[in-house]
Length: 116
Image 1 (spheres, rainbow, N blue to C red):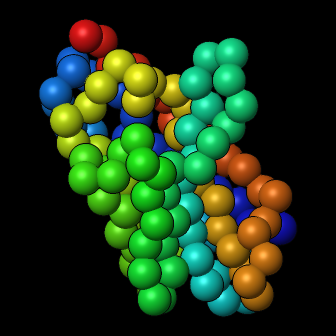
Image 2 (cartoon, helix red, strand yellow):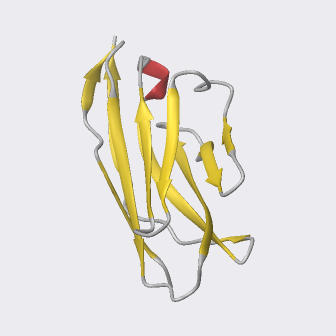
Image 3 (tube, one colour):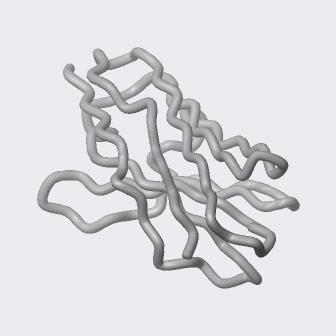
């Protein structure tokens, strides 16, 4: 089972930037996509962004402010978050896709808190 370790969350002021990282390990199979989700207090976990070999996807709420990038050789994914807003607050989790199937393995997440 794949293990995921997220890091980089912090307390930020509105308008500031943070960079999240996630490292995946424990799978002998090739990861063909990675993504970031967030869970705000009292809300369900929702998709923020994904990246594959052919492109990226962003939720409309973060498009133009967040950038997802990936290092396939290291099985890591990053999320550069610029111009943070209070609604970006939450716990951020990464997820991986193997063999075109998104895995139900989650790390501990990393907390992002944005104060206005």
